[in-house]
Image (cartoon, rainbow, N blue to C red; front, side):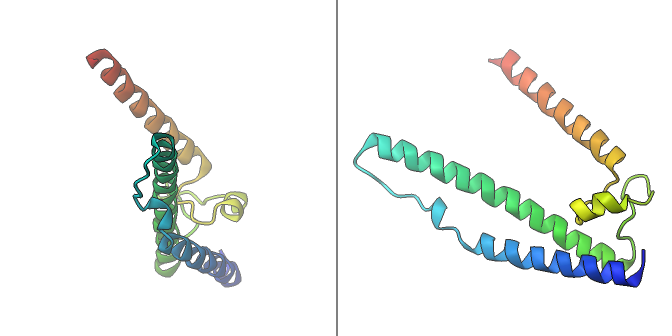
Length: 127
């Protein structure tokens, strides 16, 4: 990967990091407020749950962006963390924080999905 490409990715990732950091500072949606109306309480609880999930997703994304910036610094950016093959330029253009090539990412996703299905099956059988 050329130095100009790395500089471009560093700028993209730094901008994404700044955006995510500002989003994560806003946590007003997770405040617990009491309401005399039970329907309002349920609605606020659902909104709070959604805000917490969004916060979790954005936090994970920020971790991935920071890890990609570290990979740029240590010279491993653009190389799959699993198989050590180059990550395709198209994939990096779409997801610059991607640590895996598309093949390894799909395998990781399948493994995660299978683990989740197994856990759900165990919980259903235990009930």
